[in-house]
Length: 201
Image (cartoon, rainbow, N blue to C red; front, side):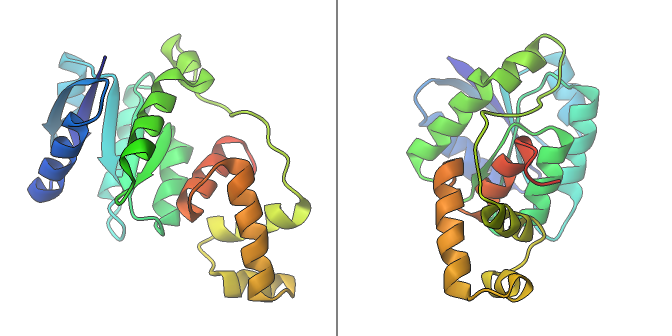
C-alpha cells in the first residue's frame, strides 16, 4: 500500500485529485497541502508519492517542485498537467520529477505511473541517496530523435516538418513510431521519457 500527498493551492483541482486517487487500488492514504506548506508537511510526515501540477502559464508549480526536490532528493514527485505543457514537463523532469500524468489520464495510466514511480530503478537509486539518471535504453532513428527534440522545444508538427523539409504527415508517422518505442501516449509523456533517457536536453 502507498500514500500520496497532493500539493495544490486551487481547492477545486486539489479536491478532484484527492477524490480520484482514493479510488486507485493500492493507495492507502491521500493527503493534501498547499505550495507554501509542502516542505514542512513532507519533512514532518513523508509520503510515498508527491503529486504536483505544472500549472501551464504560471511557473509556481514547477518552481515549487524544483525547490522541493532539491531539499528532498529522495521524494518521488509526479507532475500533473496539460498534455501540451511541454515546457513544464521538461523543466519538472530536469528538476528530478519521476513522471508526468495528463489531466485526462485514464485510470490504468494513473495506476501504472504511480507504480513506476515507486518501483523503477531510478526511484530505487534515489531511495539510497542517489538521483535518477536514465531508463531502459531505447533505439530511435535519427529522424525520430529530430522529431522528439522538436517536440521538446514546443514546436508543432508543421513547424518540425518545415525545419526538416518534410511533410506534416511524415512527421506524424515518425511521431507515432517514437511514441510506440517510448511507450508514450502523447507529446508530453514522450518528452518526459526522452528527457529521462538523455535523448533530449
